[in-house]
Image: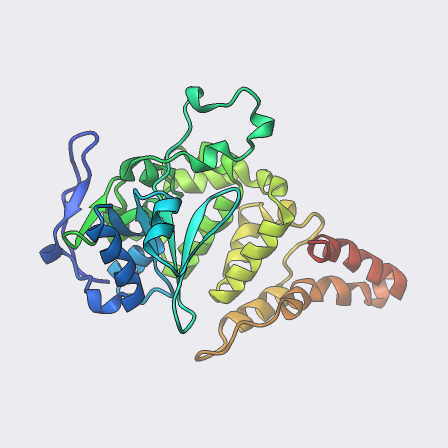
Length: 328
């Protein structure tokens, strides 16, 4: 991890600002196209920050797989600056800037949480109103999930801006939720899986409040969209932490709510961990292989003569567990 120093206390409302001389991020580690986006926004008078996981990874000495940009320019203003820009997302409006060679830089306008005055007379007619309320960088930081994902790199002076204590959490190697963990997990139960994922990927610990929040809110994972859960499962596979995270889900009592009736058997965990441990730059296994590993024990246990189940019953039971995946 890059060495850096920081002040741990600051006046209410003021961020910690880490000057260029006090952190190890070099522009040579940021892609040329990402720098083009940042500099053009800055030249036209807009705030332009690298945001999120890219800043976290650079501070940890890791090379990010992509870079995201935050700005006070609206999506329409961003589009005017870049001919190769396309606006995407109905729920959450974003600017995608695509370059030759396939690199895509995602640009998001700083958002804020809604106030009572923002609620429309008929929310049903405006279901996504809360996702597109533009705000300040500080307001945007407090909307993010974990402190280590809410750090900003300011292209204007190459400083790191920290509104939420993320620098300290990087130093202490801990995953801390922004705000009250139970409240944030109720807002979006998938955050519990993401907390476990980041802890596994980075070899960090959950802070006590996050740990307690997951134990309390574990059943809420059943309310998450199956499509999002499926996407998150494949994210665990891509980052080679599926076996570890699903074992943690079982330890927290979350797995039984993720997949009712399912328990991660030692054989299935071993298969997933073997996939996680594949060497070099081997591609992630296809989803079919992941599901086969997950349900391996359920299928073969049914073939045990002592359980007195015929093949139709075995396939029926395994099929019930698989159906949620196959429908989305």
